[in-house]
Length: 240
Image (tube, rainbow, N blue to C red; front, side, top):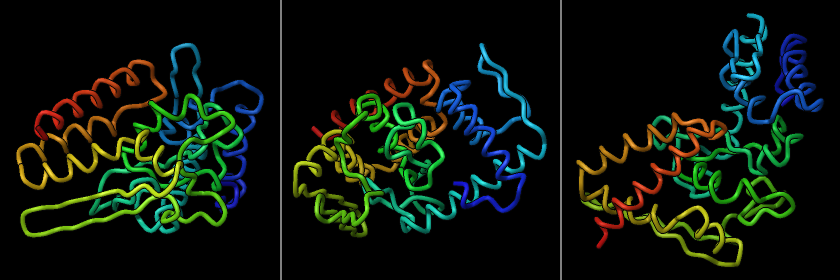
């Protein structure tokens, strides 16, 4: 992300977080929370971190630049499920492909950042990020020469009344991605939402709540798990 720094203040502000992370003064989750929401005082209960007005401005500027670059690089689509994100699509997060908790040195590397929709980001956090220390069990869209079509096929059909998405697995990584990120649920709720406006509205609110949760917070982590289970139960019942 240093390459996005436009001036000495940006570089110094980013270097401060990177040094705190390297010196084990702060966890990768807290470092990213500071970068993402740089309030004047960041209170983590056992740790308080203050930033100057210049640093707050620098972090906000760098995040905007990173988001713009990633959105363009990945063509406005989630790197895992390929659904559109942004203004006319689903909510999204800056995604750490190799989990920052296990790979803190990759926290601010643009080469490890991508576009992830709320759905894929949350399932990856629950099922992948806690164990991917040496091997990533799902596709790595940041890998040199990566081609989505080698691992997964993405079929989308829309009519006036129906919207259908189908994923076709082509190899072991594609199959694991499909299973761990719960693509079957995406297929199910996409179809059901297109036929049931009330349920689609409820789903939109569930997704908003998921997007507002902080996976670094233990309380929010439990809420995320509960919301994902609740959504799964709703759509399993509707799909029967």
